[in-house]
Image (cartoon, rainbow, N blue to C red; front, side, top):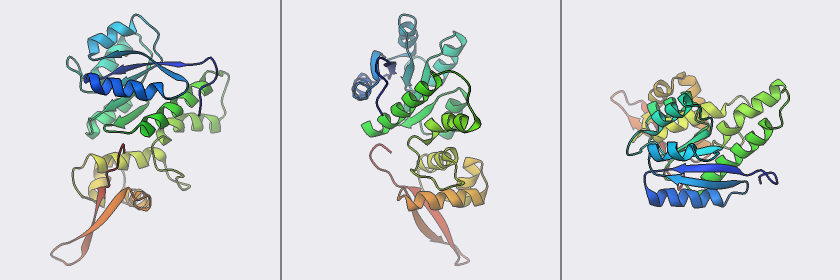
Length: 235
């Protein structure tokens, strides 16, 4: 999905690790329609750069030496900076993920990841921006497509009818941040959904080979299903 001719989105890469920032910038440079306008290694440096050049999108790490990424986003909005934000971080706890969503981060990419993982999200972002820049009014179907574009990036492909990409991503994040196997009830409670809904999405993720299922036998002899996320490069 290439960018439209003449429209290139300026990206600010913010990461305290200079090597990681350099790698992320190299990834961005390989995606048509995007260019890295600057790299920053602290919140203060990012703020200074935002005052000197136009930025469309910030790839933002959460762990910065002077201020965490979420606090930086709050300050950016208070100061009137409207650059879009995609979190690119090793922070896996659901509280941070939820706060990022509430602050308006468009996507949340967990380290480590591959070029393909970042490219998918940048392409979805580019598509979203081009749609919004056409102006005019939108019917409900178009609104639904706009709101679903980034949520679907990186989520299981070809979701069956009646399944939500946002809920699938929430269950995915619960499993990824768990650090060990979880029961269906535990997953439901952590995701804030019903047990029946959790079961539906777990079966879906199991079919995509991203979730492994093991049985644990208790005192009653009845097995309990325990789910674990299956790590893979960039996922």
